[in-house]
Image (cartoon, rainbow, N blue to C red; front, side, top):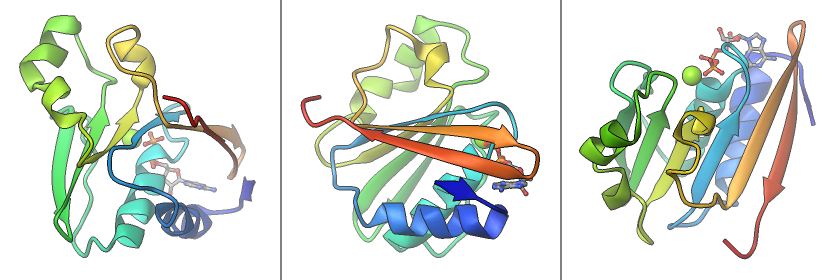
Length: 138
Ligand code: ADP
Ligand code: MG
């Protein structure tokens, strides 16, 4: 899918939200500035979130409760290692009740469970290509 601008990315997120269910782990892969956080912003809006969505770049995780659904938005870009992931209580977030989004899952390679959805964003100037893969048996 080709995304022409930021608004398109937000709209794509809102659409995608309709397909997500509790327990899902969603990976977002793409360079800095690809639009991973923008897409999550759209998804959270689609799930019914009214407030702002800030990038979890420094905190590594931002928690939300959206209509009783616990949602965790991770950005592992600055992750130092397995201990830090452990310290964050990552394992506690990944359960059947919550939805987790992970930017830079590569940084947690080998430490994260298999994702249910992988979203890859490629940059072509001001356009973005969105590639979405879903895995049934994870
Ligand atoms: P990431 O989380 O992948 O680092 P962000 O979502 O924080 O990226 O930022 C994406 C930036 O790219 C925003 O400043 C946004 O305005 C800009 N942008 C330009 N074109 C697009 C597009 N087609 N889709 C999404 N974002 C775009
Ligand atoms: Mg980001």
